[in-house]
Image 1 (spheres, rainbow, N blue to C red):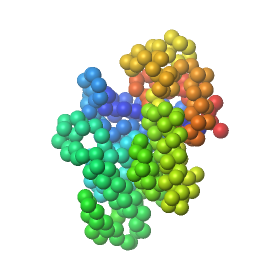
Image 2 (image 1 turned 45 degrees about the vertical axis):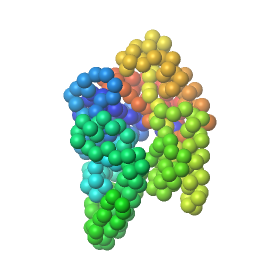
Image 3 (image 1 turned 135 degrees about the vertical axis):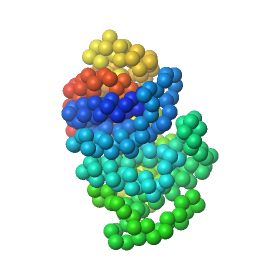
Length: 311
C-alpha cells in the first residue's frame, strides 16, 4: 500500500509552509504530495495568509522538489477553462520531469465561488462541465504532435487546436472520485487511471468500487487497470497522550477520528489500514494532514506505519 500526503492549504498556509511539508514527505519516502484546490477556508478561523492557487503551488514544487509526485484532490472544473488548464498541467508535468497526477472534479463549494466572483452552476451543469473538461483535456494531451484537435460540446468548442504543449508523461494519471452511482463510475471507466474515495467508510467504498469495476467491464476495460484509493484524516501518536494532543491541535475528537479516519498509535493505524485493504482492495491512501507545522507527525508515520503496510 502506498501512502501519500494530502493537504488543505485554504485552511491557512503559505507556499513556504507547503514546501516544508512536501520536502519532508519526499525525504521520508511518501509516494506523493497532493493539495486541495480551494479558494476559501472552511469552518472558523481567518485562513491567513489567504488562499494559494493549486497549479501555481505545484509549479513551484515541481522545481523545489526532485522525486515526489505532485497532484490535486481535486481541481474544480468551475475554476478554469479546459484549454488553458491542459496547458498549465502539461507545463507543470514538464517542469517536474513527469511527476504530475491530475485530479479533476465538478466543484461543490458555493461560498468560494461567490467570494471570488466565479459562476456556480447547478449540479447538473457542473457535471456537464466536468465531463466535457475531461474530454477536452485528455483529447488535447492525446493528440499526436503535428495534428490538430477540435471539439464541439454544449459548453466548450475548440477549433483546430495545435494541442500543445505535451506533458512529459505519455499519459498523465487522471484521478476521479465521487459518490454518484452511475455517471461518475462511467466517466471514471472512460477517463481515469485512479478512482478515489475521500472520507467515506469501507462499506460504502467497497460498493462504489464494485460499480466502477462494472462500468469498466461495460466498455471492455479490465477493472484491474483502475487504481483504487481512499482519503482519510491522519492523527497518529506514539501513545494516547500524543494522539490526544494532535487531535486537539486540529479541533477534532479522538473517538470520532478513530471511527472515521486513521487515528491512534502506529499499531492501531496499521490494523485499520489492513482492514481497509481487505474490505476494499485499495492500494493507495491519501493521508489528510491538517496541522502543517507538525512535521514530526509525517516522520513518525513514515518510520512506524509505512514499512508495515508496504508489500
